[in-house]
Every structure is written in structure tokens, then in C-alpha cells.
Image (cartoon, rainbow over all chains, first blue to last red; front, side):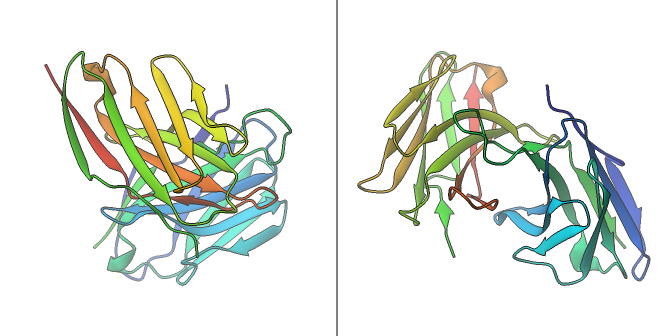
Length: 116
Length: 112
């Protein structure tokens, strides 16, 4: 089974702090994603990476950056946390095009971040 | 961009009944669709998927139906159980692209 883990389940930070959210997958997937999930808004893509050191902006990248130094690890960075970044953050991993096999994303358990 | 929507934000069913959760998508070029289940405090879990060259796909107690004519996707859960209580949402994907688009979800409440 694919396993996607996230470094923290709950995190409380203060406005202006630098925040690191880490995600690790164990299935050698090329693609990794960071989403935030807010009530009524569904999952919104922040950034994704399709290879080591490669990244692309998603739909809401402002206020965030990412790092992918190793294939299995994808980090989301909030350079200066703000209260409007309080949310559930979900990491996902995806093998990519795989013929007839399932091409779904696999999600981590999520990190609920509160910025005070 | 693409939009994926759900007709009902909350669905309540009696234990043992069948449940039907609906989803509309807007991009007729999308060719891969997924249903996820998300329990409280957990990340989304894959339930079932379907490609655009199919109309129906069955899993264990779940069936996904795809109507490309009206761009509609549905998830049917047979003999709904209390453990099925969760938020369900659909996602669409365009082949050759690595981006997925998600609906906001339908909360399924199963009454004992």
C-alpha cells in the first residue's frame, strides 16, 4: 500500500512565524502535491512537483513556497504565517500515467494548522 | 478553469438503504474521474475510479456511473452502513496532465 505521511497532525503558530510542513511518500512516485482544504471550498492546489527540484504553481501559491530536494519528500513553507493561512493542509502523491493501472492520488492524513 | 460540483451538500440515509451521491463536471475533455471518501480528521481515501471510455464501474458495495452526455458522475453505495458516514467528493483529471480538480464534497449521514 502507498503510504503518505505528514510531519504533524496539528500545529499552532503565531503570525509572522516561518512554518514548515513536511510530507514523505514511500512509493517512488514522481508527482507530489500540496493542497489546502477549507469548508465549502474543497481542495485547492497550492503547488505541485513532478520531479526532484521541479515545482509548479497551483491555483493559490501566494504566501507559500515549496522544496523538493529528494524524490520522497515534499515540503511546504509558509515564509511568514498569517491568520488567513489557518487551514487543513493535505499532501498527495501520484504515480502519473500508468496505462491501465489506477492513477489516483494518495493522500496523507493532513495537518491542521492554526495561525494565531 | 474546470469546475467540479456536487448537487447536495448533505445526504441523510437510513442504515441498509442505498445511497446516491451526484457530481457534475464542466470540462468535457476530462477523461479520468475518482471518488474519494474523507472521514473526520483524516485525509481523503480512494474509493473507486472510472475512465471516460466506460459508463459504469463496480467495486465492493460501490458503483460509479458516468454520463458523458450531461457531464454527470454518480456514486452509488449499496446497503449503506454507519461506517460509510463521511464526506464524499469527486475529482476529475485530464489525461496527460497532472492536475486534479475536486468538488467541495457531500456529507453522508447514516442513521441507525
